[in-house]
Length: 141
Image (cartoon, rainbow, N blue to C red; front, side, top):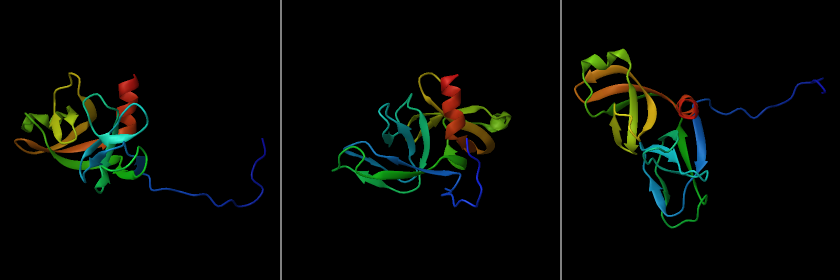
């Protein structure tokens, strides 16, 4: 293996953002939880999908083939979400799951892990700390 003998320009990317190809004939709306469909394409999250992050902008591929456009996602950070059944006792950092791109719950069943409560705001609303890579690792464990 050869080590560097001179400076080398590298292409760095923002650490909390990513871009994924979108499934055919679908729309991912800004703020949607984004899942991976099992074939490498992003879509509005469906229960049990691996979690990719939250869409930063609308990605309309309703008339396109798979991969014709990409969606930009924020793959880690903190986000305020409505969560079914959340109460002040949630300050003990329970896991948060999604059953679709805009339905969040503390119930695991066949839902997708998307993060952990960071702070309770009020009944039904909390700050969720999310990291798509950690959620994927938990899924594979």
